Length: 242
Image 1 (spheres, rainbow, N blue to C red):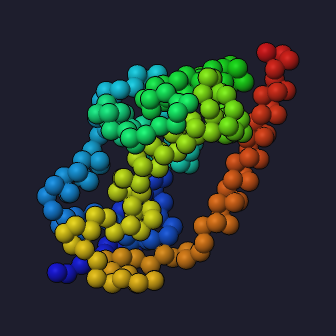
Image 2: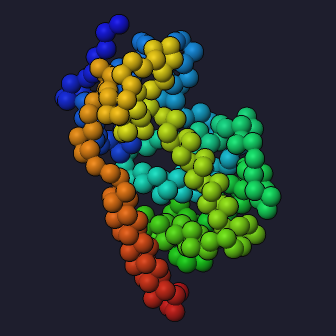
Image 3: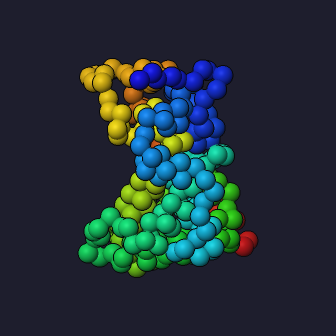
């Protein structure tokens, strides 16, 4: 079997359209090594998102904005996280467990999306999806900062867990996210032959940055808090004249 990787002038799509770590890599170059069922499932995620079956249009607006915030999806192409979660909930494909003090997952999403809209109206006078990026970040940060206390009748820490579990599962099920992290895609029936630390298959591409993400993540979190704080201060200055 012969493997090929695409040249630097041609690479796979990634969220936001940038490929800084694995230039020239496209997981879809390996589609011929997947069995028909696997290929059908993966390629199906690249089509137009299916019509909503669980969420309402209003909930879609709030949820899409939320997941873009959590995953830092600022530019197209964006992984359709809300639609992927909608399909799961429509088929009752949950994680199979929930916290004792939480409602069923679908209801938790509905109530939390409504809570975001309520918080956004209270702080900025508009629905969550209508806010600018930094204002949305502020609203989301406030939920995070509540911690293990009540937020709209639910435990905020457990809401945060619900959001991030489903968001990460949906995002990293998509080939665009695989291109971003250099993931080789399904191993069946191809398998892997070059096992071991820093070993790569012929179709894989070396990480051009080759750095630990920890420091970068700390800087992103610090910047997010700084922006959220600035947005919160601006909102508080506006409140007396509102």
